[in-house]
Length: 87
Length: 455
Image 1 (cartoon, each protein chain N blue to C red):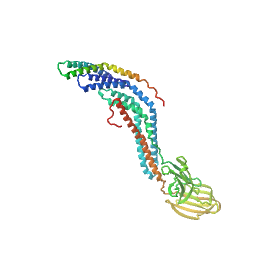
Image 2 (cartoon, chains in turn yellow, cyan):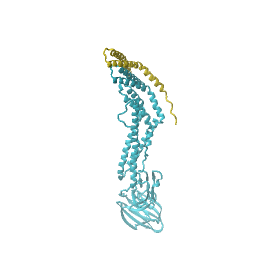
Image 3 (cartoon, chains in turn orange, brown):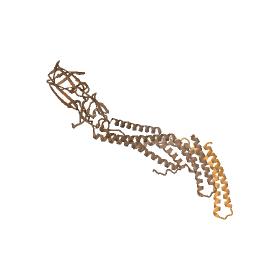
Image 4 (cartoon, rainbow over the protein chains, first blue to last red):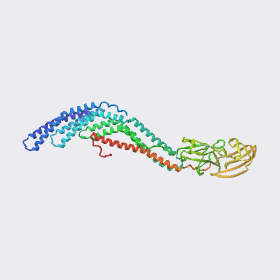
């Protein structure tokens, strides 16, 4: 197994863990928000955890699209440069 | 590992960084700094991916900049080799000067020359460093950029600074190092070796018949008739003026006289001056002494006075046969060292005795002098002799122009400092400039630059 494969496997595992982490955070967030403890700060924490989880899930889902967009743009830029202007 | 493998690895690392960022962002730990870290890592991943995707763009950009700036590596290398040749020439010249400064009173000159030689070897090492750096950058700048990209895309900003610095270093040096000649030439100091060993006059000291006169003392006088040098002709009658034995001034005009067995003779040409060699460094000037006829390498000397003309002369071993024409009462003088025995003197087939004899001592040689008066008309004179030769013990006094010496020393030191300056100091300054430019570019790429701020 080459080091690139290793990194790719690691990435796949990280992505899986991240998805589970999103679910966990989501549940914890709702649990905190819906808990019968009348502390405003606790509710706020739960709210922000939910928001973060949603944003993280959004970027996680968009990750491959972002990278392919980057390679698309740069591969379009990296055409041979025009010859320099002659003085 | 090929370029594309490395790029692939870097790309995977960038994706990993991004995903780790989202993972950290999604962690159910409500700490603001942690979330910030997650965002930062996502951004790092994206910027690393941008950098990786624009790798070929970067390389093309560097080559484009090279053409725009009209710099190319082959001219850089030819410039370097020109510099090396210059140093080696100076090195050879100075070593040569060092070896030909044979006279003991020049030894103090070898010290500044050695200092300059030290400078030159330092400059040579500086050139070596430049060549090494140049070939390293030229051959490996792509790999440096690749390695930089790889380091840049490591997660948790492990190698972001180092990667950014490597990328900018490789690109800046690849583009700007070939421009070093332009920078250095701006501060160029003229480097020429002047003064010493500029002229060499050599030749033979010849008698009336054109035979060389060995062990004759050539006295050299300046325009004020002060003796500036006494040179001994060697066993073959050859003399050398300059060529490391003498420190001749740039402009000189000397009158020359010959001294042999305690007698002084005039010499043709009477003057030796700096214009005689023309533009060339070396020239041959034979000194002719018309007043004497020598036999067997100076064992016996026949001096004629101005009333006597030599019509014919034959020189054999142990015998000189001369046909003379005398206008009025003429006198010939036979001069010989005491080691020579004058066996017989025959004039017009009859044996003659010396009219007047005396002895003198010249440079440790006992000299016998025999004067013979001959009458008007043509005479055939035969001189039979035997015996060996006595060498005078004489310490040469070489020409030593102090006014010129300071010039030489100053020239040498200027040359050494000039070479060191233009080959070591200015390139180092340029390299330092490039390093600080690299740091600034690294900061643009996202690194923090170096802690030590040079500019």
